[in-house]
Image (cartoon, rainbow, N blue to C red):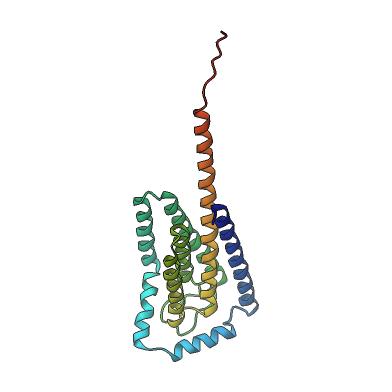
Length: 224
């Protein structure tokens, strides 16, 4: 697959995720920001399956994917990219993480959807979209795009699903909240990656043209 086709694919995926997010947002708004039927069904299922062991498991991604946890993870990944000389990949991850948090936190505060009343984690009315899921998805998609390894996608998708389950198992979010977070993460990661790659390609092209010009022979202006 060429870089151009990868860039087009990322933009298409980002656009599709954005459209799906907008539709879901409209459905939630039309419902008065109350839980949807599928939200209630999933919430009741999580309550019925509650146990001390699974609660402990659920808190692991919740803590790792929290504010402090993701700052540490993000910083370590960025440092690793810089150490390997992959400054463009480091920039992609940093920009994507800052962007998804800025967009998600603003939307959550403006929308103000109420979390489940029996939330075991956060209780403030910033339920839609799920920030934990959005950041986790953003990191996974960026890593998948820059590392280009099938196992990164497999492990990454498993982590996203675990995060989505964790947030609903702890009753911190409705199912539609975590779906919205995943869609936001895909959109942000895809668009940021495509933009950074396009910027890198333009700079490399300019550098190549400048190199070609500097290597051209200088014709003598002295008449024989």
